[in-house]
Amino acid sequence: MTARMPTITSLADLVGLIDDDIYVRWSKGPDADAASTSRDSLTGVELPGLSASPPRIEPWWDDRSHELWVARRLFDYRHLRDLRGPDVRAWVLRGEEVGRGPDNEPLVRCREPLAWVDDEALRECVELVGAQHSDEWGPLDRSSSGR
Image (cartoon, rainbow, N blue to C red; front, side, top):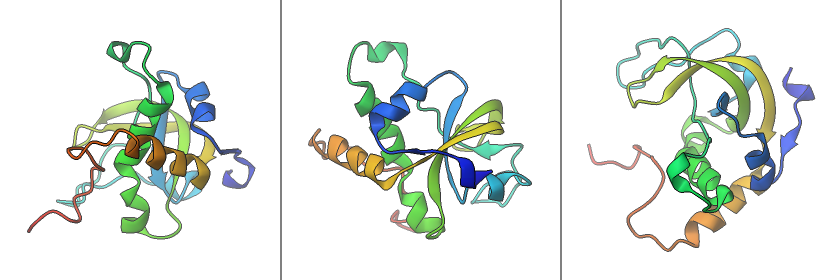
């Protein structure tokens, strides 16, 4: 399945795929996820679907840059590759939401894997987010939080 998936190399290409049932997932890919669901990392509880992020653009965003919207959605979770290992990548799927996770993230059942997200598109994310010059915004990375 994953060997045949195309690769998205730009944010513009990802923006072109966005629809209500499109999600981005960070994992080892659809083959690795096919027989499993996500687990809550705090309690270990098995969740009813795969944790994913919807890149769809909210109506209040109006005519602002769609690439910036998608960039921040990818940027939010890019730390997962470092946290979960070198084989973890972002990939795009068409899915059905089956619930919400403990961080209020959508839990989805994958109906169709669509594409890998290339490192070049991720570099675009970093550039666009960095160009906003916000000291109050960053990835949703808990690994550096004080314990």
